[in-house]
Length: 187
Image 1: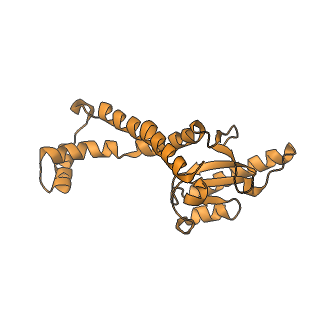
Image 2 (image 1 turned 180 degrees about the horizontal axis):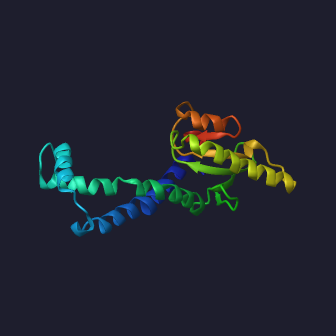
Image 3 (image 1 turned 60 degrees about the horizontal axis):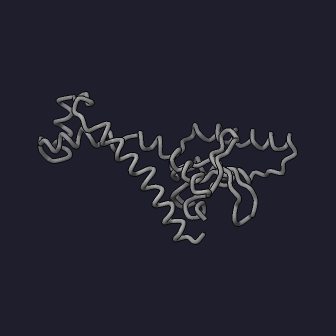
């Protein structure tokens, strides 16, 4: 599949399954004023920040924007992207705990097990040891079952960014298991 074809397919999937779902959800769920618990002091302040005045539009933005731009889309984004890889036959869902997808690497022609992360700064220091433990558990199970699996077969796939943008937490992981970022990951 050519790069432009893949980009068109991913874009269409993203629009239909992520963008439109999110848009419909927030419109349905957050279009009724009774759904809001309004802090009358804070809403006036936020209106002034957003519109430089206390206006109906400023109040609407102060109430609506946090719900539309809040953490719920961040939470569901990873699952939806994982589902996209499977639905578009770019990868298979992984049955191994801690791995999101499995796929044949086109460069090395080896099977890879991958945990997905969205960007180059999306993990913190508390995430490093548990992630490395998951990878070690998989390697130990492979050895026990006489499966030829190396550290390079367990990867952390970062959907966007550049290698140079990786946080120090990703860099620690990259010393033991490849962290494949942005274009390199999509390749």
